[in-house]
Amino acid sequence: MNKSERKIVIITRETRVDGLIRQFNNIAQAEFYVEKMGGDFADYKRESARYKDAVSGSYEQLEQLAHVQRLDREYVPQYIFGADDIVVVIGQDGLVANTLKYLREQPLIAVNPDPARYDGVLLPFKESDLTAVVRDVIAGRRQFKQVTMAQATLNNGQTMLAVNDLFIGRNTHVSARYNLNVGGRNENQSSSGIIVSTGLGRTGWLKSVVAGATGVAAALGEDMSGAAKRLTSASGSREWASDTLYYSVREPFPSKVTGTSLVFGQVPPGNPLTVTSQMPESGVIFSDGIEQDFLQFTSGITATISIAPQKGRLVV
Image 1 (cartoon, rainbow, N blue to C red):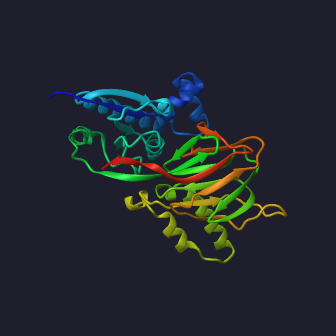
Image 2: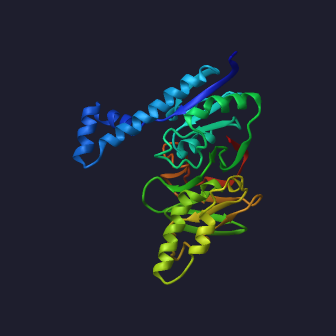
Image 3: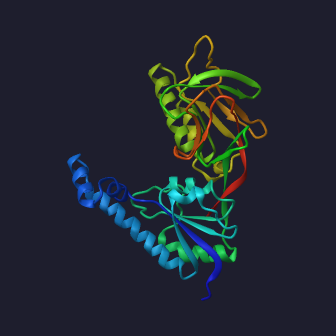
């Protein structure tokens, strides 16, 4: 069989064992540390071995079909993907989300390296599926799920995309100060930051926020469990393409100069949320839990949060 001229880019991540070896210089020291702290290092090694087997097995299959390049997640933000590239992600759901936002609608095939360990909401394929799936993608026979992303656009021209959620606040645990404007209403606030979630992200960070609020309400004798369940059970693919974002203000503090009337709600299409920083330093915006990849959000900067113009394309 002739190889396709299209390039396949395999996205991988380091395992827990790899991270510990980097920290402690060798596997013996890593094992000593984990076992001393009461952990089961044998499980770490099983996880690592299974992941590396999945990566090597995938590579062997794919190199029969096209030119293959392997790329660690650390280098994804700087990598320039070709327009015809086919991207294969081997890892957990978070790696899929962290890759999608750097693509420009290139097809993404997500592989679950260890179905017994990972639920894999975004990981529909096993290693053994790859040859057939990639052949179908090359031939144009596969369908895609559209994934809506959020976009933060700053008044200095910088932008950032998010597959699950954006965080707007401080890079420390001190309070963030800003002005929030949504739906024609605005308010100066002091809080632990704002989370803006996509349809896909409703089962992520937003779910944790809503779970906490539900627990507080229950302790006070209120019942909001039904509404919370409806909001955060959006695991179906139709919700992934939703053009409605949700914002949630974390731990808003009421004072003489800061309010708490705009703490949760929708950001509908065509009516973006805007946030103006009142922080002289340490204000940041980051997406999908990647704190190292952030935009500066200090005094004078305004962020407009809206639906991104491009969609993610997950192969199904």
